[in-house]
Structure formats: C-alpha cells, structure tokens
Image (cartoon, rainbow over all chains, first blue to last red):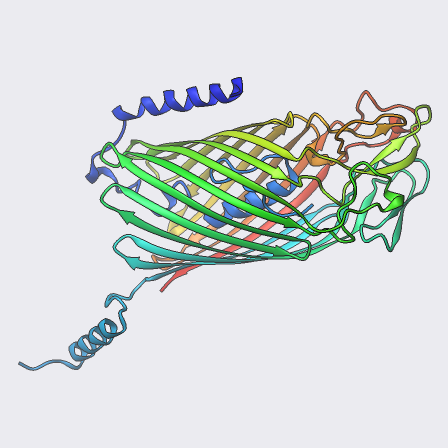
Length: 73
Length: 414
C-alpha cells in the first residue's frame, strides 16, 4: 500500500472517530431534512460537472464513483 | 348515512387504486428532474448539447426506483496532441481515408470530432430495517465508437441516532472501445496507419468508503475514500505526438500515443455544508486524488446560496483545480527518443483550471422548481516550457482553454 494511501486512510479514520460526540436529537432536524441541505442536492448539476471535468481533466469521482466514463475528448 | 359525491369519488378512487396495486395517496409519487446543458469552448473547439431527464418513483416504505436518460451531442475540433509548427502541417484523419492541414503557428486540432452519446441508468433504493439502506444501480452508455456498461451497489448504515452514516460501495464497469478505422498500434507512425484488429476493452472496479456526519442543527460534513483500479486499453486512439528535429524543433513525424494498460487511483473527498440563520447555504468541498501514472490533483469547490424572497435564490460558485502531469506526458518527442509510453494529451499535462459562475433559480412551490446556471471555465498550463527549443520556443505549447457552461433545470412532482 502506498504511503499516500496510508495517509488517506489514517485521515479518514481520525475524522470518523471524532464523530460520536457530534449530532442532534431527532426533533432538531428541520433544517437538515430540507432538500437543499442534502449532500447530493443538485444531483443533475453534479452529474454534468462530473461529465465535463472527466472530459477535460485527469481526475474523476470523489463524491461518487470515478468510473471509466466516456471516450470523449 | 348520506355520502357526498366527493366522498364517493374518494372511496371509488381508493378502491380502484387498491385493485390496481397503486397507493391510494398517489400525490407526488413521481419526482422528475429535467435539465439541458450547453457547453461551448472558445476557438471553435468542442461544443456539447446535453438534455437529461431523471425520474424517481416513490414506492412507499422507503423504497424508490429511479431512471435517468441522457443524450449528448458533441461537435467541433479537439487538440490532437501535435505541436504547432512554423510550417504547414498535414495530418491523416482517424479513419485513415482523409487528410487535413493545419496552418503555420496554429495548434493542430482534429476537425473530425463528432459524437452522439445515449446513456441510460436505473437505480433501486430500499431501506433494510431501521438503520440500513441498500442501493443497486445499473448504467449503459453508448457512442458509435464506445460502449460502457456498469453495475453498482451501495450500502448505507446509520449509527449514533442517525447522526452518522457509513457508506460502502462498489462499482464494476466494462468498456468496449471500437475506434474509427481501428485502434492504432501504439507509438507507430501516423502515416503508416498501422491498426490493430478487433475491438479494445477495459474494466474498472471502484470501491468507495464514506462517512457522513451531522455536526449540529444546521451543518454536516462528508468524507469519502475511493479506490479505483482500471485494466485494459487506456490509450486515446485519436491522440498523436510530434517527433521533432533535434536542432530546428520542426516536426518530422507523428506517432500514435501509448498509455500503460492499467491505472490505480485513490482519492479523498470532503464536503461541508452549513445553513446560516438567514437560510443562506454555504458549501465547500475538497478532493485530493493520486494515481500510479504520477498525477496528483487538488480540487476546491465553494458555493454560497443567497436565499432571496419568494423562493428565489442566487448561488455564486468558484471551483479551483490543479494537477501534476502524468509521468509519460510529453509536449513532443525528440528524434531518436523511444519511451515505453508517451502521450501529449493536454489532459495529462500539468495544469490549473478555474470555474466561476452562478446559479439563479426559484423554488416555485413544493412541486416545482427551476434554475439557470452560467459558468466560465478556464484551463491553462505552461505554454512555454523550458524543454522547448528551436521553433518550438516561439510556439504556444499549452493553449489556454476557455469554455462557457449554460444549464437550465426544471423539476416537478406529481
């Protein structure tokens, strides 16, 4: 496993371990339940962006799967 | 007991629905998002027109089925990878049947770029118990020289009173590449049109591990770790490289490019979202990606949604991207150089890109919303690299790419 990957894993675990003290009670969710507060709100915009930047740059994915995408230039 | 006509109608429709197996409260069972994207690059390069329709059917009991259809029409010219020259250059088209010339000191663009893509995907999401959800997806995408099929599964598990969501996903994709005129033999002379027989293929396996965490009543963050392994034909069959004279820098030959037949990528993605007391929303995300081709990239994305009156909003956005070059990226090859792999594809070079723009929209009511997005994209690299010599020293070896993005969305429920 590459050193960079180990750092990525360590960072993810550290961030995740700090999670248990955060959060709200079920009746405190009126803002978080709004559609515009979803992490994947604007799904079509995200999909268009993924397609555009996949075609123009060497990176893809992150929020979702990277995939192999299209053969476009 | 006397029944009003309204009540009778209600009872009848409920009975009909139960006979047909449709839920009686049929309101808002469908959630439909439509959008049209127009993407245009400067200097008559690529233009794309892309309509999309996505529909999600609520099946009740936290179960839904969604469908998405994308059409994508591309025209224009695309940078071939060859360097500009002080002399007229002549290239063979990918089919091997035509030729095109490029004027002195112009960036060689392949004018035969034209494609239509159709993509269809399906997704089935279902809750399992109180704290788990599973999501199964399927996608097929078809262009005249490219077919892609993929299937994915995502499992999400809530803990900590649903304040923490753990996501585990896998995506498996199989691509088939059938280039116009056949896939060229890597690093052979373009003039010889030495093509391999049959179609080419590759497979990609992606793994995703993520955590979404609620911080407080108005903010949350997400961290994803992604691993991606691609194996097979990774070369772009339409890209070439110039071989230049070691003294003058003038192109003497053009070779088809060659890339390794595997690629491992890892990325770490983080996103933070916060609603302010005035209902404005701030979103920030960052992605670090690294791969075994030598490319590292950093992507920052910020948006701020100003909530205006009567459901209107305006949302400025800034995206910053930077990548290092692939180990085998070369602006050109010198006469006598024979690397194992080489590509002059600008997308594998060292570069920076900025997207700036805004989205303006209105949430009409619970059932309808529209928005308009306008953005400008600019990508630039080192256009006068230190390795340029002879005539190359006076050429723009990494022309700046500018593009406009215009998108209109309309969503409704019924």
